[in-house]
Image (cartoon, rainbow, N blue to C red; front, top):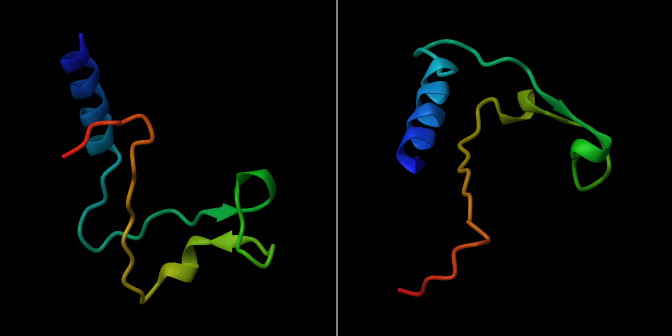
Length: 65
């Protein structure tokens, strides 16, 4: 069952993938959805021309190396 759910999730991610040269849809976050530290709205256009790294840390994973 887990494998089936993972496969469905991965296939849905591929459906929303961008091709090289395509620009993603502009996103604006404000209020309860998020914002900049100074309280102004965050816009995805702020990322243009910058290198960024997105990390996700699983809060449930308690395993130790």
